[in-house]
Structure formats: structure tokens, C-alpha cells
Image 1 (cartoon, rainbow, N blue to C red):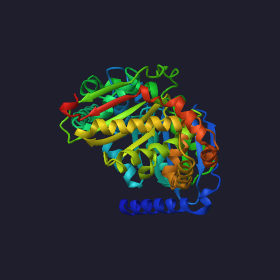
Image 2: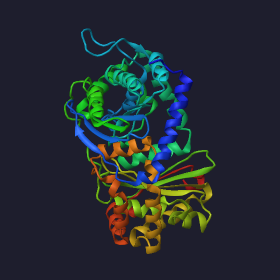
Image 3: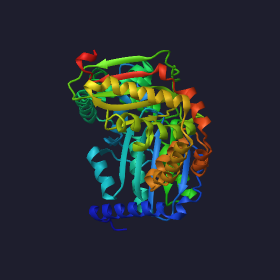
Length: 458
């Protein structure tokens, strides 16, 4: 097959992506989406959704290698490791069945671009992810899969790229900490989680302590097949998906021992307030506490309840009380961030420094009132309608569907999750919301961080 020009490939890839999104919005997209699940011979868990109408393939490989495994004093290690997966590959060992000359970072980038494929890798709190998007044409797919396989199984972690990425990360930390929103978030997570890894944030000191050998060791320990989940959405058969998953994971580092056990996330015993002086024109306020893990049965009552409290934009209680009635903030919100262990409930806003105390008092009272009384029936109905009608937009294309399916696989959610999502939302009652908030949100035991407090408020 003759190789297409890069520009032509990019146009075709963009066109097919648009077609995929439009196709997902069609009425038939609301039918059952069968998710298949199995364990590869390598030990990796695999989920697969066949999407044959568009000639595209989206693959995501998640590893139990998130920042929660950063060693104390070396926060930022997981992010550096994931970012360096695209920085070149070593040659395959002599006699190996793997294809295999060494490739530099530039050669890898060019190779993906030549076939119009897209590759990226990043790390979050719970896991690290590598993603591939390519056309499902067998020849192009095979070449793209070979490239991502090399990136996952033979990363070179060159010293020059490591030093460059570490310096960039240190520069970003310096710059970001001058921003009040970032300073607030760093202080907020530290106050919430203390010495639990969820509370770690990369600093210049922690990044400076990381060595290239730390990256290589982190990769060997965490990027093993038994700590991987492969999610596949696209125009391939089940048989092809099985072969794909085996190829991606069979040559990963030898199965590591069980992942280190995480310390428990402890509930807050009392409220805590931290005020940080900053020359910003506005005060940035965050309020919250550890609240919910992703597989918690309170997930849907909290989802629906928060849509009323602060997740529904201009229709939310917080917006009504803080912005509309009193003009104390342009934007105010709340949300839950479920993680492997209890993630946060967060309420946040920005306001003028001289009215920070007033805005905080109103917001806190609104949360307390809602936790005690829950939503009205009219609010509950509006929240459910908004959530159910907006659900198709969460999966209106292969990339979004891939992320949702990957989340289902990672957190061990039921395979019929997509099909029953709307039903579970509809079953939530006002009593369910009150009970869930009573269990997960204690207004008198919140962490409060204010960055940009005025001198009068110190």
C-alpha cells in the first residue's frame, strides 16, 4: 500500500472523528452498548466495545502507576515517568521476536505522524494512561500498534530528555505557584490529606531529588501487565481486539509484586481554616473534605444532589444564593471527585477580598442547609432531566466513549453501567440525597483555604 501524505492523513483522521461524533449523536447511539471484558494471557484486564461504523481505533492502556505511588519527597515521579514514554525507545534485545531498532524521540514522533496516528501518555492521581488513536485500516493499524507497543515495552528514558522534562516541570511549578488558584489547590489537598499520597504535590525540591534511575525503577515496578487495564473502542473484531491486547502487554516488565498498600484516607476530625496572603485582586476560596470512593453506593444520590447544590451552573443553589441574590461572586460551584480511595467534595468561588468572609459565610450556610434538608421535588426533577438528557454528550464520540469504558474497567463498575445509568439517576429520591449527604458531607468538619485574603482578615 502506498503511503499517504501526512496532510492528507490528518484531514482524513479529522473527517472520520467528526463522522464518529455525528454518528454517536444519531438515535441508534442510545441503544445498548455491549461492553466485553476478559483477562489477557499476560494478566492484563481488557474491555472492548465494537464500533464498526467508522474506520477508527481508539486504545487506552491504564497502569496502576498514578501519583499516589510517588515516594515521599519525590512527588512528580509518576508524571515524569509517563511523559517520558514518548521520548524514544531502546533497540529490542538480540534474538528477541520483537521488532526492533532504537528510535529517538523525534523518530517516534515522525513515525506516528507519517500514518496520521496520535499517541500521548500522562499520569493522574490513581493511574497513568497511554492513548492511541489511529485509522483501523489493517496496515496503518498494525504500524501504529507496533509503535505504541515499543513505547510501552522499551522506553529509553534518555538522560537528555529526562533533564529537559524535569527542568520544565520545575519551571512550571515556580510559575504555577504564583497563581492564586494553583496555590489554593496545593494548600487545599495538603490540608485534606496530610501525608497521605493524595496530598502530595510536586515542588522544586521534590523534582530536584528525582534521578533518571528513579524513573526507570518506577517504570519497572508499576508498568507491569498485571497492573494494566486495556480499553479498546473501534472498528475491530473481538478476535482482533484480543490479539491487540496481547501484543500491547505481553512484553511489559515481568509481573511485579502486588502494588504497595495505600494508607487509609482518614476522615477529618474537625474543621480547619488556612488563609494565605497573595497580591491577587480577588480571594480564591476552596472548602471541602474527603468524601467518596468511585465504587461507593452513594455515588448516584450525591451526583444528583450536587447537580442541585452546585453542579448545575446558573440553576444551582449556590449560584442563586451567592451570585444572584447577593452579587458576591461571578462563579461558584461544587462537585465530588470520586477516586480509588475517598476523593474530595469541593465547593469553590472567587470574590473581592473585602467580601471574602461574607461570601464564605453564605456559601457555607447554603451547603449546610442543603445537607440537612436536601432538594425540593422541583429541584430534583430538574436535576434528573438535566443529567439524563445530557448523558449522550458524555459518549458522543469514540474518544469520550473510550474514557467512560476505561473508567468502568478501572473501578470495576458493572458492564451494564452505560445502559442503567439513566435508570439509577431516575431512582434517586430526596430522602436518598439527604441520607447520602449526611454520610459524606459534614459542614462542621470542612477544610477552608483562602488565597488572597486581605490584611484585615489575617
